[in-house]
Length: 324
Ligand SMILES: [Zn+2]
View 1: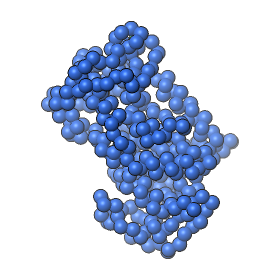
View 2 (view 1 turned 90 degrees about the horizontal axis):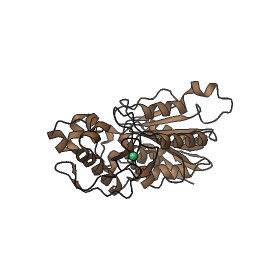
View 3 (view 1 turned 120 degrees about the vertical axis):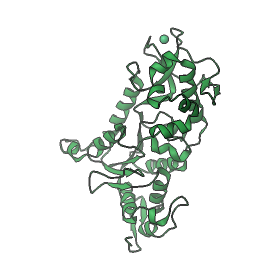
């Protein structure tokens, strides 16, 4: 393991305590041998210290430390939903508009359970760390996420751009798309038979035609998803990015299987985008910190990858960043 000299680099807003990147006991869930190279942690701390804005780009791995189930592969999915395992029903078949048409009680049993879970769960401490870093920057923070769980809003990310690229379970739309309306799911209180994954009370309905309502989430084989809420969020984030000069993208738990989050990260950090950009704005001038236990490789030497879970990676970086 590389050993750094004990020194502190002082800057206007933060002090990077390099010794803190090398000299600490590992988090309780990690052995010392499994820790990322301290040079990588120090590199990540320097990128955050030098940034004028923080962009959090989050995939499914962000929720694992809050205790949310991991849907990776049939095994992970069926472990969380034994009733669907018994029926041999894969994620792609229940997360599908046709499931609402064929078996509304089962489809809403699944989504109603998730809605309750996401309402009840407490976001892990990594959300607070990210928010604190963002609030210390002149341009603040923004969020891009493929998660539909609303956990960033629950953690207090409410007064800046949040782009939920696959929609939100906390919003509803008409299954038949009789109109363009998207409305909050707040009034719907699902009562779930968890053993059989079935909704016991009345499913939500469309206030315009009285037909069945569905979550405003992009599903598999989905031609009816209303995307104007997502498009508005997309524009707000793009506008915000115009004012950034040195953004850092902290990408967390976003794998290569569903690549929308990675595509966004690379759009902000790719030097090729930066070259034609006369305004010198955030697009193309960003740096990337990728936190991912299995796929942490990064495209360039100025970027950095940490092979850890979300909370562990954020805590390791936080220990190197001490406010002045
Ligand atoms: Zn309708």
